Image (spheres, rainbow, N blue to C red):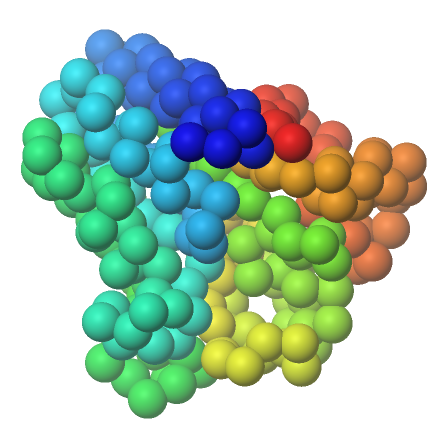
Length: 224
């Protein structure tokens, strides 16, 4: 393990412990609970650590904050990431609900996915967000033509296209992402710390969409 990996691994374990405790606490009061997680490379050690948490996984629902409109076998699929790194061992008993369908485009599939997502155990116990260098979170990109819709609609999901990304996407709306008891932000590296600092210093959500979640209680997990 490199010097860079060590604090990131520790951070991932700490976040997994916090999320595991959140799920455990809510399971004492509810029959089933929901966890919303993000894709990308940053969450991989967190997902592996979370999979080792002793939980009644059969009572846990898992879905994604956003997804590329690709097949689950695609290297870019967040669903594939979840299946390979979280849904292992005892955690394989969790009910995973993906954000894609057999429709050719997210615009054609959004109604089916919205119905599926609406049936989950909201409010979520925890939403674990990531953030890009442009200040996006989930698929709420500053250059997306659907950003205003994603920030304002009360629909659960939004089909998203953005010039900076090669694939069309689907994302939980800001309203749906807010429907959680707890929010966590998981980021690494100096560059993203600087972006977060910039976001905290202003209020233009369309310039840095992560700002949509900074006014609520937010557990920030950062490592160099």
